[in-house]
Image (tube, rainbow, N blue to C red):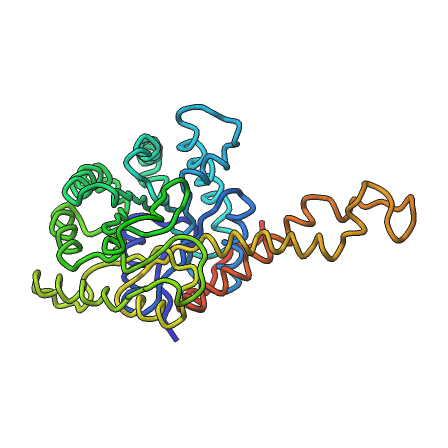
Length: 364
């Protein structure tokens, strides 16, 4: 039984993020990071975290943020505003679920840096008022750029983030497949495997600025859904990154780097366990929860087809009302329940289930 990490409930930032991620690394579990697109999907994740006694990461992608503000909004800052809207919702409701939440933004490619800048401006404004940033962490994904440029841009942004104690996640080496408009389906297979030297070069550049960073090192990962065995994942490579950096810096800790796993859909339990044992503290989950959300709706429609053909008229009679079936609160709730159950699967596979006993506030 893991002794729970001593951090507050609700959105955590700064030293508490470090404490929680270090606790995960020390105790051999990882925290699932779920991409959300609405208050409904955020609530599904929070409910699952409370049910399965787990800390959790809620993250907004660029496309998810656009959906949050509304697809019809074409303002140049729409995605930043959508991300802020999601963050404010999570900050408002998370304490009532009684679990610690890391509020994160997902893959930001070079072409999306204005979105990143907008979120940092919101962090700075929030920090000026409350003494902490709006978000807990942000991710820069400049893996499509040359390593030197990737690292140099990360350094500049990390310098801006460090005074607010915002965690930085970066990616070196490329995750295959396609996600949120970034397409790496035809990438050179060798680029799907990051070398220990590449990982150390990131550590060497960022560590003088601060310790609040993690590295998404590619080990054959692919975004999207695929059958286990169809992709050559090599999570054992991750331990070599740790060993290389440990030797370079003469670290007393066996796993001095915080690692992140992307493209986990379809991974076997053994592959996930190997990655976690090598120091992975966060795994992204999106494709599987997208399906689960839809599947809850699909099953509801299939089971209640005769009550969903009109506002009135069903097997009980031609004038019988169907409002209790088509009310969005009914079928969206089924989607939430289905997604929450799939979140629980990730918590169990990553070992975070049962690591935090919820501390819900007293009613009123």
